[in-house]
Image 1 (spheres, rainbow, N blue to C red):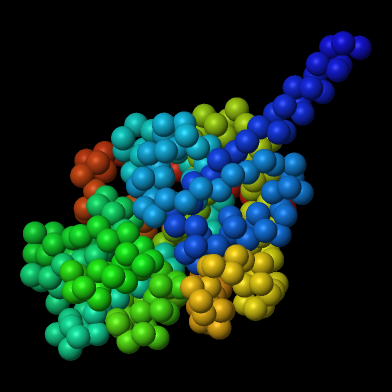
Image 2 (cartoon, one colour):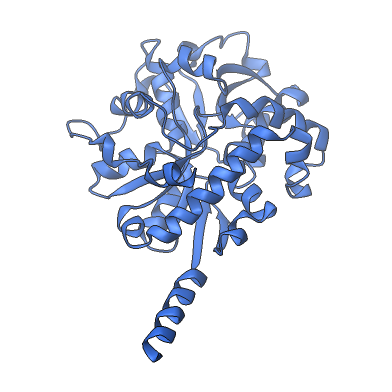
Length: 324
C-alpha cells in the first residue's frame, strides 16, 4: 500500500513540475501560440504548470535553454541545426510557422534607391541579433544578388519599439521584422515592404521552398526523460493551432492581452488576419522544409560549414502525431 501511495506521489510531483518556456518575443504574431494556449487554458487542461518568459532574440533564448534555465524555447527551427553543429542535441517537437512570417522593410525615404536586397551595398541592415535567424535570412537574400557580407553592415536592433526607433533615427536602411510591427511601420508611413516572407508564395519565391520557422524546441535529453510532459505540450499546441484555423481573427485577438494591441486593436486584428496562412494546421514538419533551412544557413553560418548535419535529428513528429 505504501509503495502504491509513493508511486502516486511521484506521478503527482512530475505532473506539477514547472515547465519554463522562453519565447523569442512573446508579443510577435509569429509566436502567437504560447500565449494563446495559456489564455485559452490548454496548458491547465493538460495538467501542466507552464511559465512563459520573453526574450527579444532567439539566440539569447537558446542560451537559456542550454544553461538549464528553461525546458523549452519557442523560436526559429534553424537553431536546432545551428546547435547540432556545435554538438548540442536540440529538436523541434512542434512546428508553428510554415514560413518565417517576416518582411525585410526598407525605410520610406530610402525606398527609391533600395528596390531589392541587391541595393543594400554600403547600407546597414537591421537584425534582431547577430547570429540570429534574421541575420542568416538577410545575408542569404542579399547573396542572391551577388553581395558578400562585407558589402554591407548589420546592426542588432531587437524588435518592436527598438526596431521602429532604429528606422526613425535612420540608423538602418533596411530591417527584418514581423507582425504587428510591419503593419505599424506601413500604417505610419515609416517603411515599405522590400521582401515578403510572410506568405507561402513569397517565401517560395525568395528562398526556393517552405522555410519552417517558429517552433517549440527542447533538448533531446529532456524529451527522452519527459515524454509525458512533451506529449502534453504537443497536444496543447496542436489544439491551439486548430483553434487558430477554426476561429476568426477577431475571436483570436479577444483571447490575447490588450497591451499586445499597441493601442490599436483594429490594426492588430488586421495584422493577425494577414498572418493566419503562415500557421501550420497540425504542428508537423513540412516535407522539404529542413532542407531549405539548411541551404539558407550553410552559406553564412561558420559553425555549419564543412560539417555533416543530420536533419532527422533536428526535429521529430512523434509527439504531434500522437496528439491527433
